[in-house]
Image (cartoon, rainbow, N blue to C red; front, side, top):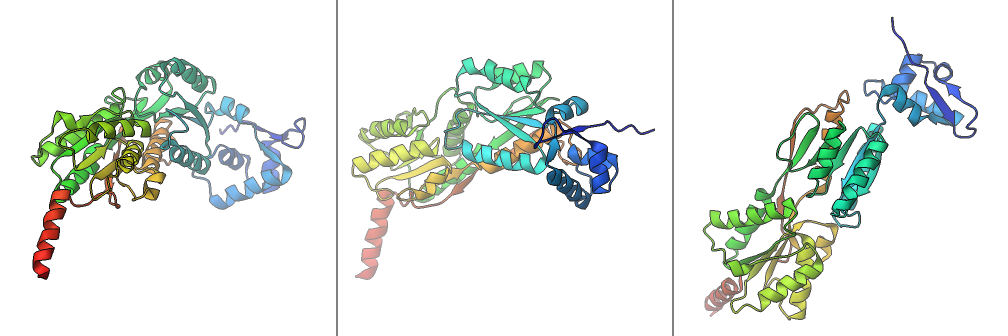
Length: 367
C-alpha cells in the first residue's frame, strides 16, 4: 500500500487560504503522487508534467511551504556556502555559480563569510545548523578545520578544499597546483629567465603554502637555482605586492621575473614597477595566480595561472549532491579534482639578457 503525505502549499496572496496537494493535482490533471514528487524536486519526473504542475501553482499564486516540506521530507533543500571574504575578488564567481546550480537543482543557498576570523567560526556553524542545511561547502581555502569538526559532530555533510582525509560526511575538492605552476616556470625558463622570484601568500593559508611548495618543486625539476633572497613573504594583497616588489628592486642582482601567489599580489608588483620606471615585460616579467576578472584588463594584460572558480564551485556542489544522496546526481567520489593551467597574456617576455642577444643577432643578420 502506498501512502502519500498531504502537503500544504500557502497562497502568497492570502496566507490564510491554504491549498491542498490534491487540489493542485486535480487542476493539473495528474496524480497526487506526481505533484508531491515535483514539489520535492525528484529528478525522474517527466519534464512536461513538471511544467504543467508548476504552471498551475503559478496561476493560483501558491508556492510550497518550505518549512512544512523540510519537516515532512527531512530535508531543508538548503545548501550552506562558506567563504573567507565575500568582497574578495575570487568569491563572487563562486557564489554566482552556486546560486545558478542551486536554482537548477531546486536548492536555496545560505552564504556566510568567516573573514579568516576564528571567532566567527562558531557563529557560522550555529547558523548552518540552525537552518538545518542539507550540506555545507566550505570554500575558504584555509582555516576551516574547526568548522569541519563542529559540523561533523552534528552529522552535517560538508565539502572543503584540499581536505587530507575525506570520510562518509566529508568530501574534498583537490586542486592540482603543480600543473599550472610547472607551465609558468617552464615558460619563463624557455624565455631565458634564470633569476625568478616568488612572492608567497599568508603562511596560515594552506593553499598559499601549496603554491609556494609547487613553485620550488618546479624550479628544482628543471635545475634552476632558488635563492633565499628571491623568496619574499606576501599577504595576497596589492599592498603586499608593492612591499615585496620594493624589497626585490633593492637587491643588487634584481630578478628578471616574478611569480606571485595570487593576482592581487601581481597587480601590486606591476604598480611598484611602474613607480620605479621598470617596463613590463621588457625589464621584468610578471606571472600571477588565480586569473581573476581584472587580470585580463591590466596594462599589459597579466599572464597568470588559472584556478577556475566555476570549476571548483561546480565540483563542490556536485559533491554535496552526492553526500545528501540526491537521486540522479551520478557522483560517488570522495575527491573531486581541479587542475590549474597557465594563461599566457602580455606581462611576460624574453629575459633582458636574452632580449639583448636576440637584438644583437638580428643586427648582424641585417648588415
